[in-house]
Image (cartoon, rainbow, N blue to C red; front, side, top):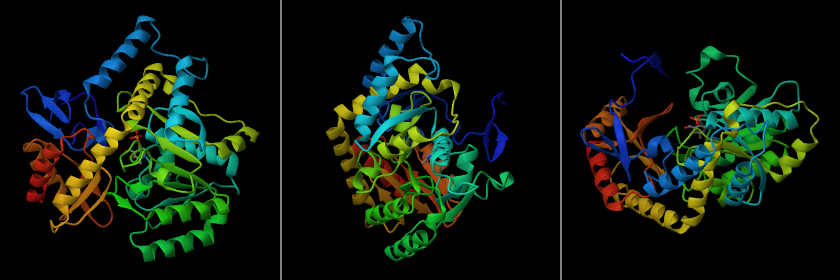
Length: 406
Ligand SMILES: Cc1ncc(COP(=O)(O)O)c(C=O)c1O
């Protein structure tokens, strides 16, 4: 019996695993009996760089500097601090020239709320907010996110009617579908204010479209004056192979939501990056705007992101090589496996039989391998998002075991 509760299906205290990690190292979580668990879920996709002492030492030093000054906390609504500006500059340098401002948040879910508000402030064409989103997309669990997360529409029926007037669009799974869906969006989008896009459906089980589709989609949306929000909370920071998914596109989104790997999961942290174009529209808006959460300027969160983004900048070539190695292992072991799978960079989803994913997860846990589950309207399976620094031989061994048990 625990005195803290988790809401996941039920109000209770059952966690996905009954493991109590006491430390971590490299790609492993370790319990008090020194049992090692290979973390093929990168700490719920946060710890993409793995459990790395080098990064933790740098972060601990910076935390210590602030704590020695007895200044762990400021809020950026009330105060200025050099860390706010230096970190914004660093993140923007990493994100690229199309974006010139950020707003700090605490999570992916908060990013969705904020993006909905920003879109509403500058682009509400009618009386109610008209929003497009994909079936099976996931954008978090707050109220705005419950509105636009296609995957959780049944789960959250109790909260109907939700924020805005949301139309869910089928996420294309073939080139034929892509063309049909583009036509559909083209015919309706002039009525809409904003579209939320998870560029690769991560929680639903790694579904991706062609880059041509995404390019054409953004072009159609912009032609029809629809704000484009890319939720890169899962795909950002090299998970798909490039810094961000949108880097491969000719047409860029207006808002990009980042969290999780932005600070390797050290503290709750996120940000929304604002395009130059949207920034000028926001500046001209006469709305009385509000978005505030007490921890938005938390110095420990912001300094941890600064150090982790610096790490990405310094080690980009190595990280890209690591992801290349992970992709090679995926390809080598899965191509002739007879299994149904989808992959994208260091993201992999393998389909399993009905009601089998929980059982498989438990079996793999016993064998010291941690994976994650996905469930969408068509299928269920395991998802594998390894930390980038995983030894390819280790990944290979684990994946062979996973394939054997599927
Ligand atoms: C694409 C995407 N958006 C938003 C979220 C929600 O982020 P958070 O759990 O930090 O609120 C997630 C979480 O998995 C996500 O994958």
